Length: 153
Ligand SMILES: [Zn+2]
Image 1 (cartoon, rainbow, N blue to C red):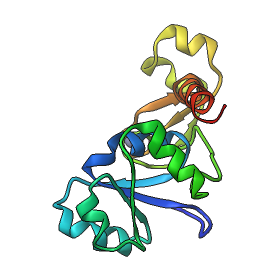
Image 2: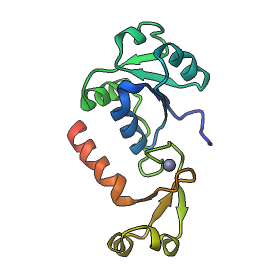
Image 3: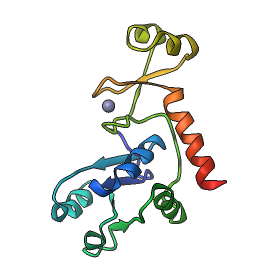
């Protein structure tokens, strides 16, 4: 996977699945794992990622590389935003399941794989190179705008 050095990279444990999903919607690269807690700091550090957790015990082990998030998705995202970690938001480019960057797929090729109504009203489709899930703008953008409205307005 190609990333630039400016991009914020995250790693989430089992306590932060909701945050991981939202960060991917916003276009950030998030590795997630349900490994035993003790191995997570070194796994995330090896990938140059900031480890996000809601476990106070885990957060205490290396405060420089681990960020303790509050309960609640809005509170967690607000904290990330306060710390300047939610920039830049680039929605609609990453698979929500496997974190891969999505690839453009020509509209005629997706016809068999999406509902006819969806195919008829959308022009731009993207596919995950790993799991082959197909995305169209409605999937991401509606969630994004709803979340952003709730959070930041
Ligand atoms: Zn995928």
